[in-house]
Length: 298
Image (cartoon, rainbow, N blue to C red; front, side):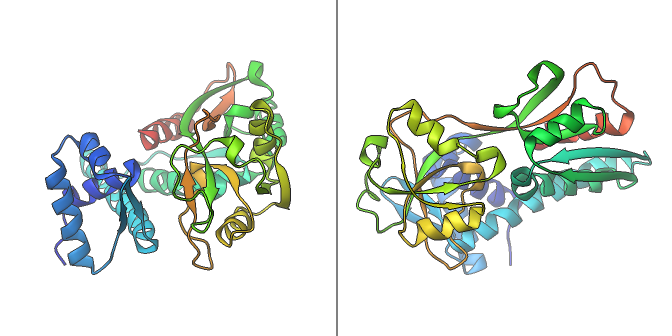
């Protein structure tokens, strides 16, 4: 199998832009070169990585897994270059990090993996809990850092933070939905649909808040604390939902497709960030974790 890092970069750019033209602009290469790179990847792997349609592309089930692996490969190469230049870092110490369940499941693991490769002698302990308690521990000095949805911080006067990921919200529909092929949906077109509601700390009330802002009260049919539960219900056509791209996956565990569509209305973002107690003095290991998180964001 002959796959190059250049092809992986082009593939990631197209996957993130959801179009060949968008990926081409992101890497500054012609569309034909990007198209050739994707075609070569599919030939070399024997996989269909994208579904092609009039408005762009979407990842297949195999493409979603390939994207995760491609990102891991490029991260490893970047870390290898750092390791060769610096040698194994001998810094020792301990960091106490708090995180909410959403962040642990969809953001923290990759960041921690990168940090452990760079600084294997620094011990990282994790406390997972709901956002209010994580904030309480952070302000009380029981945590060095916290990874959480900073859009909904309550103790802003006592916490400094930096946004690492800004995630747009979109409408999730099953391909069988009557409006599945409509671009530029309005919330008014969905207000009579049964809604699947996620009752999970950081996203609790997100859907009600969005509809309340636009004066379109949702007709809640199902409530669940499981993101996979939301995916499964939407995938089988039981209802629609509004969710951030952070948790979007095009396939359910049962293999049903899910479409994520932008709406005409500008929906709020979910901002995942790293926070620390205001005026606190960071130890060497904490500074290194902050630096790694900032690089991870870029």
